[in-house]
Length: 409
Image (cartoon, rainbow, N blue to C red):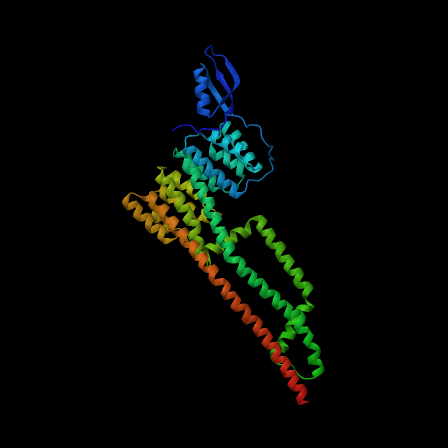
């Protein structure tokens, strides 16, 4: 393929050996690393090292964090440039120079230094991300192993886009119901802590026994008011405990287990294992060996609990068991993916079949989340109306009973 045409040339530092065997250092300008290499060869030099320099431009802040959206765009743009014929270092230089965001320029610089120093794309991105998005280095390792780094970059961008879409769906699904729930709790608190106590003097003045419903509300209100400080301290301690569990990683593991084994297991498993199936299918379709592809695909699973459940699959396959049978033994694994894997094994199209089934499961999960978001809002609104209506009815019936008692007296 032809090199990428640039509006201006890039600077490359080089170390080369001249015809006399002397090692020399210098700098050369060219539109790409390939052109720089060719120019040095034409001058009779044998390049040993050739590294693009970051051109002068706005200073970048090394502390600037690379956001998920920026990482997604970086992976997609790198994939496009590699498919157009550029090499990874030239592509990073292009993107770094043309970006208006300091965080993206800094990321391109760090990647250029790492890769220019001899590291592979997997190691360079692992260093850059510092434990975030472990799926990205795994996909890049698969791409490098299969000789198609652009495919690994493209798949990484797709994974991030899919996660972003799922996150947006969850926020959309839960934000309105959460608002309704908080509104319900606020209304109940206002009634129990402010409105109900104002009725206590009426009960005392009437000298009659309050109706059971009103008496119950007065008891609840008095209990809440008497222990309000203790309740606040208790909630604060619970919040601190939750934060401590979260920092220790225990809360995350518990939540993952609850998601994979609880009422939402169908949707959670479809999202998590669907992404795993797509990654594994893409690697197998690209010609990666089963053992390597499976090992890397397990690393791409976003949850640790899922990775632990998938780990025995690798051992089973290495012992000669078929992939479909090994997947069926994974707790909570979508049966549709395992069945289609068996079809792929029988037809010789395991990679495409896995990728297709994973995408199907993920899309079905997104539809279920969207349907849930449309249902939760009306359900909670009805529940809010019923709760507030019941409280008001109990309060008004009690007041009416007090009035009747006073008139009768």
